[in-house]
Image (tube, helix red, strand yellow):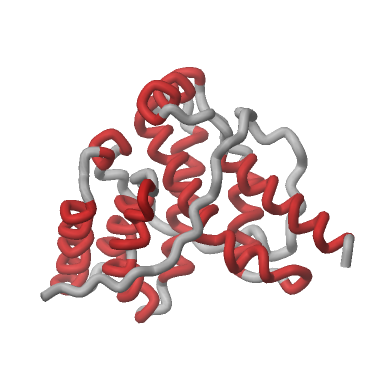
Length: 215
């Protein structure tokens, strides 16, 4: 019997009204990276994944884990993470399936590289003016889920910084925005405001900076 190990992801509230990030992010010296990664494919958009229940998504994760086992290609696991993070996290569904691909990535010390690769791939997608609206919305959902995943450790790093701080700053600095078509797509299919993932990241950074001033 397959056992799913739950990995906790804090869901970030999305009750904002802004569309783009207008303030200047605070950048640490290590926020930028010289690493380069192949683009992580977007094999499913958010509308396709919206129809998948936890059992179906679990099976999709096991398929990627099996592809990795057979090929030893780390990109198969990254595709699984991209897929899981492309789904909105209602009822904590991502928490219930992500460990299937996360654990083998962590065993190979590749989880952080995977998060970095996903940030690079999906910020580039959001910057592509010719990208279909549904794909841009999917890229934003991936980034929102990454922000939520980074948040618990990010808020505890304070002056020391760390990987989570660097990645949060990278998302803020990307200053990604929704196209008009993507805004309409998101409102129509998700009933959500079109706040940019960069705004979400920047607000968390500013909140942490304010807390540091009080110490």
